[in-house]
Length: 402
Image 1 (cartoon, rainbow, N blue to C red):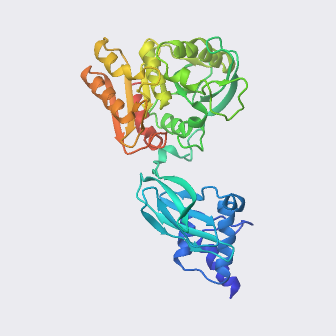
Image 2: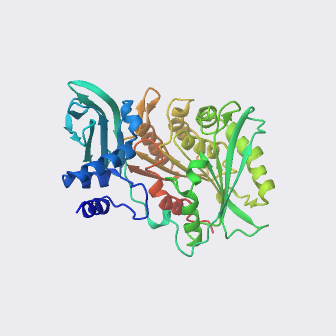
Image 3: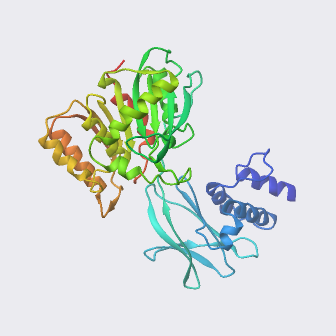
């Protein structure tokens, strides 16, 4: 009987039979709790919850939250009854005890685009504090690897020899499609914050989308150059790049000159590729500060970049980017095509209001009769909102280039 109970629990939690250590997820935990486990089931579930949240983290009072889709799980270790309360004092729910060592859990599903702070309360006092941020999307098949679709190569190098941004180091990842023929010229697309966007298992999956759209002939054979912002030489890999805001948020031609004089020649020399010289065959992309950076590059050098992909763009007053809506209106229209995406839940802080700034950019593009597209979503700040829309955005951006 015990064997049957544990087998049933494993099946309800969606566990693989080959796993030595069961894997628990918030959705599986909710399903298990809904069945009101008792006896051996409680002990098994108790151990899986400890593995999910980490016993030491719970004992140290760290925020015990796990999110899967729109389902949120909380856990705490305390011998007294606990409940989860929003920052505004609204009760979310009482926690369920698992075992006799104080482990308690609560699992609830919320509407998409929910964002709130919380406290885990015990005896009227906050035991743990944290925040919940739910932003859940569904990808199309164009963001997933497809059978029979040639996979491009991803090649990396480190750039330490910058003349324009001295004493910096950065990683550059180059995507070369399988369809590229050595010696031929290909279209070019440069991406800011490159490493995380090109990762085929990351949120954006740009290399996978390139594979699929190039195979479908819905974008031209395009070499992607994915450039990370500069870290100072004493910074460790993985640390937030200290030079990012200077490079990305600043107006002027310094960063695009860095691309044209340092990074792109190095890519061509190192990997033996060639870029088509006409600006309509060149695009540049980025999100947040990388988004204004992409626009600045094309604005300053429309003879080099005609296409811009910008999401949650930072057109606010960090290094003067709030001037662009006005500059657009008083400057002769430039031959650039711009795709913009922002969300009504984007940032609002001392530098400005991101949705308002993007609304102003949209209005100025419309007033000046630019070739542009503005997509509005409910997304928060970040790249999650752009990721599932990327295939459609790239089709629009490259629609007349073969």
